[in-house]
Length: 392
Ligand code: NAD
Ligand code: MG
Image 1: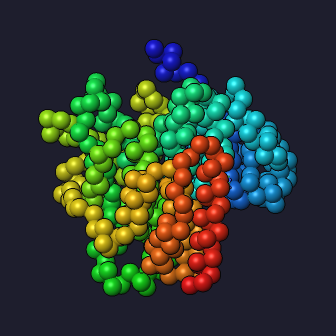
Image 2: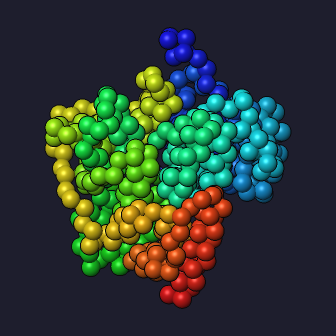
Image 3: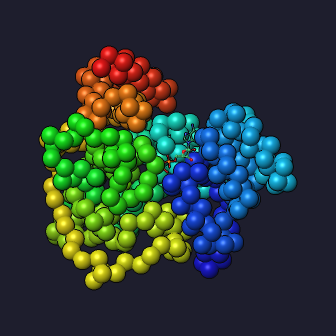
């Protein structure tokens, strides 16, 4: 067993320059000798990827943006680093699929991550999933592929990591009565609803507890992030009864209620390095490099019910989950377009909801039989959302 604990694991990080990707590398640095890096990928931040190549010596690096990829290649040559820069998308998929890759951390943002998540699953990899959008849009289908190809989908999202930890000691799943999915409530928890229409991108991306990428920060402010997490939890744990609990301090990361009304919770300071370390080390516990929780220092913990009227995006996500089929793909595509337009100052804050609602009204619900079905709904929902954004 100790040999297993000390065994070296060869990993790929997709989206290594982002918030989750960087935290993953911090955990890896805490555990020197335990992990080797086969591949790091990013969109366009070649400077940060270059630094990561210097510090972590991955065998390969890949950038989606071709101009950035060229710059990275030149800098790597100049610095005499051993990392090989892949330029072809097919090579990226080949390295993910290769026997050398054991574990894949999916830390990119948006449904743009779906193709590499798909490759990881059909090649039987152990997938640590932060990129919730890919799984929200295709969870049921990806689960069936994971079963078929012997892949594991393991949550990195803090709430889902908490639920995984709460369920770890429960022998019979039938003993679980519900999941209590917690959320901080975002930066506008106590904001007067009349003031929401003037919210700026800067305000919406200033989360009180978590330091995250821009897209998920806006999602957390509209609470659609909690809605996406509801869908994510539904697919990950196959438990239908899920209640959302607002907990502003972000110390309890979610709970599980059992048939005897006992409730099991997982606690820590809000630091993504903890769920990342749980996923990277599983079934062992490895150092995360985070601070310890001091409850006496922390003070009171508060809990509220979510305000569905003030945050109607939450309702839309709930409806999409209940509809099933391609509805989560439609809501996700509409949200990605609306959030990008809001961050770009093309629409107002409350327009995010309007855009998503109009796409949900428009789409025809259908069963998802293939990954192609997902891409079709994604494309048509995006097109419709873009039209609506232009018309505002
Ligand atoms: P981020 O914006 O900080 O980072 C995104 C990463 O994805 C970057 O490395 C970027 O280069 C890469 N990327 C974007 N488009 C790409 C493309 N086409 N090809 C390759 N790489 C691409 O985002 P983040 O906050 O780290 O979030 C990443 C994912 O994790 C999201 O799905 C988010 O919902 C989820 N998540 C984040 C947190 C958090 O604390 N940040 C917590 C839970 C879940
Ligand atoms: Mg979360």
